[in-house]
Amino acid sequence: QQKVQQSPESLIVPEGGMASLNCTSSDRNVDYFWWYRQHSGKSPKMLMSIFSNGEKEEGRFTVHLNKASLHTSLHIRDSQPSDSALYLCAANRGSALGRLHFGAGTQLIVIP
Amino acid sequence: NSKVIQTPRYLVKGQGQKAKMRCIPEKGHPVVFWYQQNKNNEFKFLINFQNQEVLQQIDMTEKRFSAECPSNSPCSLEIQSSEAGDSALYLCASSGQGAHTEVFFGKGTRLTVV
Image (tube, rainbow over all chains, first blue to last red; front, side, top):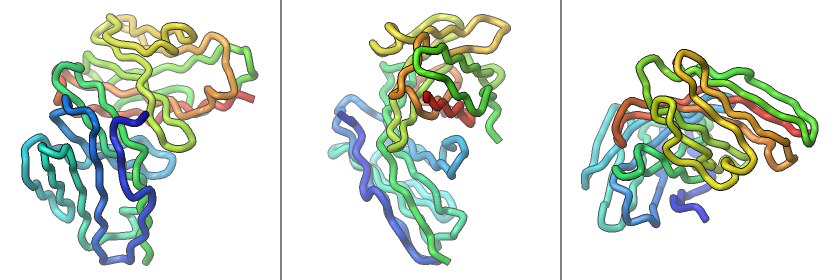
């Protein structure tokens, strides 16, 4: 079974709106979370990473992490049609030599 | 743009045939991963290497796949006898040393087993 659960499976937001994506790990040994974006037919590209409790902001993207609950969320403000893509959450731990455990993703559609 | 180069982009094989795909990791990256992404976007880790040595692999890979990362040559992943369930996007990725360095992905090889 998937160790990393993402919700929702799909999300439709209007252009300029806020998109909020969630991710939880059931593996208590993970200590690092990654958010990747994969446009259709393209390779996944890393958006943001986080390993400390709290919040990290880069431009329109904000990621939160609660280490106690192993829950992370990604928020995209002022969403653009070009943000339409599959958003993948991944987690790993130091002892696993970088191996990433991925969720099944959230398909984001931004309507102009 | 990704500097992990995968070939071919598309591969069509009949059931029982061998299917081989190649990957050139980003220059200077000693760690290489292979993942399978199915039609439901689920990722399955297959195998990883550090330099030429296998670090971890799943049972399926050990039994049905052949993979290597020779020095000065592309890495490769080969399915010995393709099955319909092997139809998927095979993603190669590479990273620097350490668990928390960014992993960079190639564009993948889309395998269709007919």
